[in-house]
View 1 (cartoon, rainbow, N blue to C red):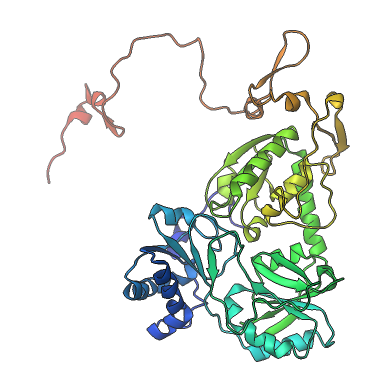
View 2: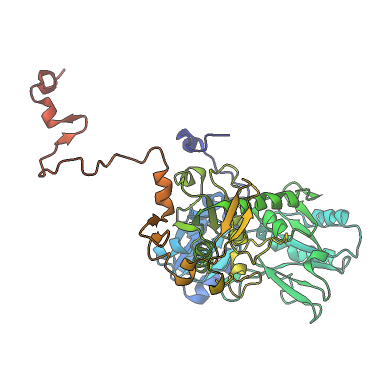
Length: 506
């Protein structure tokens, strides 16, 4: 493993970007691959004048040609957005607002997280896929024609799902093909394939499931746990997110690049227990760092305020960090933080923090650590919007009880074995005084205690910075300082023959 706290400057010069999605650079291929005709219709019909085109790193080589094609057809001014502040799957509305764009066209893979600020068009592209081989792999994995299977897929293969559905649904009557759909409350559009019936519901009693930009129906009397999941795409964050969320379902997948299907053998129980270990670390933490991992996903400010309130009610201290893309050296600068919570889209929230100096948890995991009314049941929530009031997984924080002010709940840490106190009914929370002052009364006498956690951590460090020497330095008037540059101050040459001798010209 490379050094976690430094990186080689030469690595930037030798870094390469792999291009795997584009199939050619000819104008005809670009028009079809990037669906330029549909994009121009979206821009012209809405009379947009400034258009932001957001490309992931692997598609940037074609960005100039796509931009030129759109400008020629629509006469609109385009701006290419690259190197997004956070994950490329999220829409970078902040960068688009910097150029005062009227709308955004997002290219490539997407997490389909809802946005609120600007009109949006998703263009996923058309990655190649052999539909016949995909159907053959499905039949091999599910020989029983009565199997209950939900078909999920990466957004870049959505163009072929209509053909796949026609091949499977006549043979498998219980197969459900998920449809891509944006949140109704956001102003986003998808270029749907005409072969897919977007309003297909077999019965009025069927239950409609809408999650992660996918919509599918479950037959009456059934639940999602009664279905198997068939995923089309490569192994990555999207598949991991699906498997963690629907962890009671058996998963299989088909990789269009290798043309192979397989039963996913990832041990979800092991992954869940790893996340539960991070929850135990969050329970032991006294200082929580809230990492802002998105500025575009709807309601991110609401969940940040909710997390700050939960951390405060749990008797912990919170600090908020906005640092763009997360890496090990950035987080290692703040040693006083015991645990970080990452506010990001569902796919980027599941961050593997094994190389980090401190664990990084999700908002759901932090709620499990701080809210005693939320219990660990094996269910996993990666979308923070489900934790907000009105969400499908919202659990209110217990209100402080005036009669139980002096009572404290204690339990045993499963990591250190020490007793820890859950001070969710402290008088400071009820009276709201802990936020107004860092000094609280330790007893009924004049003794005072400093409750600033960061200050306490600093007091315990062996090195605390430059020595202030308060009261030991005499007070003097301002004097003239040194002049010149650090290599040779002007007064250093006085009386020094070597320093005052000018250089001789050769």
